[in-house]
Length: 445
Image (tube, rainbow, N blue to C red; front, side, top):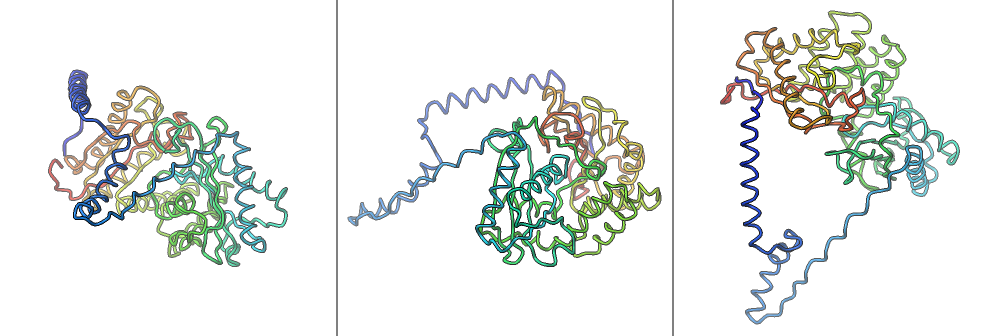
């Protein structure tokens, strides 16, 4: 497999001039054709009206009426100070929930997460504290519990929420200007969403530093259980059924939540027991569980067990076609950070990835990422160099991987946070992803 190399300055300039030339020709051609204000909307009625026009031409009256124009989307909510945004969203959700059924007064909070990474942070923890304060002050008839296997037995209402950095159009791309706060309450007895609220908080008010467990977790990937949680909040409206995947994972979620709390409190033996128990549930095959077992074994000094647990993480990533390992680099650098409690383990991680790739006869695409800080061209080069560095380390540990890996850089185009803070809050933007390539004998490999 060939390595991808940075494009030279001369080649990049020529390509850029060529692109401008093509664009100019396209503009001249387009300028010769009068455009409709909304080409998609205008073309659809024309196609639908064709049969009616043919009927009218044959002497029959046309009966088809033009489709009504779709209403414009509602404007995004105003950007508020953090505390105001949380208070407004909490009041709206609890007020609507009480209006739906005032007798359903027991609520369990499933910890809020970042809507892109699934991480919990200081901000999401603070939101939960603020919600408890709002309930205590303004909804004293409501009882709120943390999520546990015991608290779920009575089929209470469940509160979920996401907190996601977004741009001016409420999208998770481009320059982020606020945090979108989604809060949803579901009723486990009816299986329905009973209340939802969306607010926006000022970017500068938010401390998005990950909690201890998520900061320490070595691997990230799209996880089915976390995506079901996020979809329950972001892709649901009042009256919808609660996502089935979310319901099926509630027991595992309760055990994981307790385990993460124990890990944060330094109770590593208790955390390990809870993670291992969660792994035996029907929804236990999930990244948070494998990360948790690895972290607890490492904190307890169980060297052999932690190496085996990291290999389980790698195998999970190979099965899911994505291994986003947090090889954390210094901002603007190809050197690893030294202040991470796990940076000393990077060599072991690389060796485990290399050996598992050989054992599974897997070819690898290694993708470097950067934060949005700095010029895009520099970020593209930096991300590629980071990927090539990991590539060289993998091939050094397992020479049989040579010609079976390819390194690419995508700069900051696939940011998960996108805030550009270059601290713990956006560490995943400076990640290296390793993706299995199938088939391994594909052209160019």
